[in-house]
Amino acid sequence: PELAQTLQTLVAQLQQLYARLPQILEDLSVRFNLTEETVQSLQIEWSQISETVIKTAQSLAAGIISSSTNVISGVVNAVTQFILAFIFCIYILFSKEKLGRACKKLIYAVFKEKQADDIISILHMTNRTFTSFLSGQCLEAVILGSLFIVAMTLFRMPYALLVGVLIMVTALVPIVGAFIGCIVGAFLILMVNPVQAVWFVVMFLI
Image 1 (cartoon, rainbow, N blue to C red):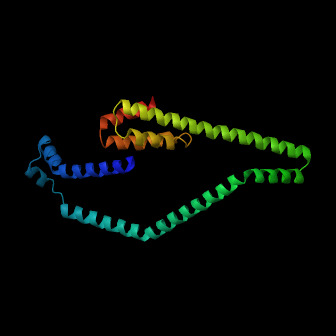
Image 2 (image 1 turned 135 degrees about the vertical axis):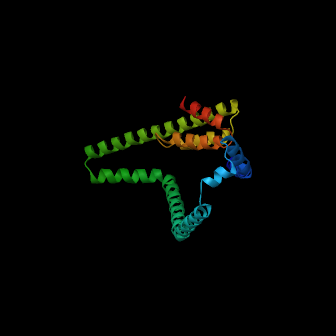
C-alpha cells in the first residue's frame, strides 16, 4: 500500500509540475530579462527541433516494439525458473535429513574413513560459517531498517516505512546493497522535499 501511494503521489506531482511549467518559463524570462525580441533573435528553429524529437521518439518506439516480445519471453522464462527453483528448494528442505544421511553414506562408501571424516568436518564448518553469515546479514538488515523507520518518523520525513523496508531488503546485498536503498529513498524524498532528501543522505552516512 505504501508503494502504491508513493507512485500516486509521484504521478500527481508530475502533473502539478506540468501545469506549472508555463508559469516557471515566464518567471525565468522575467528573471533573465528575456523579451520577445530577444527570443526571436536567437533564431531557434523550433520546427526543426520538433521534427528531430518526433523522429527520435518514433525510432525509440520502433525499437521498443521490436524488442517487447523478447522482453516478455525473458520475463516469463525468469518467473518460470524462479517458481520451479522455489518448489525444488521446498522439496529439498522437507527431505534434508534423508538427503544428508544418504550423502554421508555415499561419502564413506567412496572415500577412505580418514578422508571421509575430513570431508564431513569441512562440510560441518562450511554449514556453520554460512549459517552465521546469513543470520548476521539478516539481523543487520533488520536493525538498519528499524533505525531508519524510527529516525525518519522522528524527523517527520516522508515514506518512512517504505524507505526503511527498502533499505532493510537491499541491505541483504553485501557492500553495495544499502547504498542502492539510499539512492532510491533519496529520490523518493527528493520528489517531496529536496532539503529533507539531503538530510536523509547525511543521516544515512552517519
